[in-house]
Length: 227
Image (cartoon, rainbow, N blue to C red; front, side, top):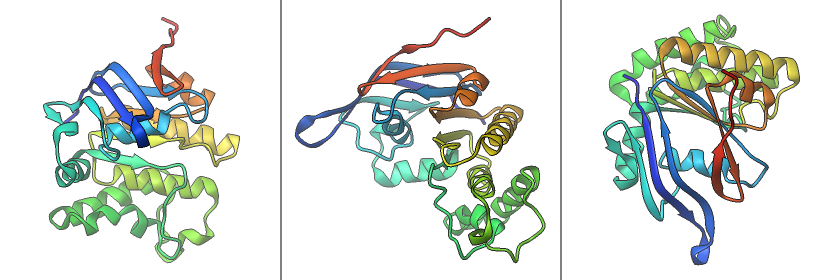
């Protein structure tokens, strides 16, 4: 199942009602790959976290398919994430003492009924990303590019409908970043997943279907793409 996104009148506020993010409207068709572009501090990560239900929303609506996650309580949002969203973080967030397979399969610890399927999904994603076959090696010995590939495999292991990625290439050298972008785009397109990436990376901007600009905590428009 793939899910479309509809955002309307979204406001995320800090202490004292300080504006952190505003998005009047954003509609993304299911299976679309988009990038969120903007300077550091513009609100890119906040937007991603709002779409995942990870930050409180002061006003407005975030709807994935028929589910308005902005109206759910915390446990409802967490259940929706487990069922539908794979997250890729800039800082990898891996357990150094575990293998690639163990890290990529972590979601199975929280969804016991799907543990075997998640483990199989993790193994398949790692193999696709060139990291299969060495379960004894811990990620403490991995390069930055290898670690980020483990993080991508973890996001894909439960076969989510949605992938949200926060600066996935920021810690990588150019060659590793280009390879990761190519793999991520190809793997999400093949499965029909909706992909939203917050990134400064020109390679990401050139690879997606749509490019959205964010500045000073506001969605300011969409970049025109070549036909």
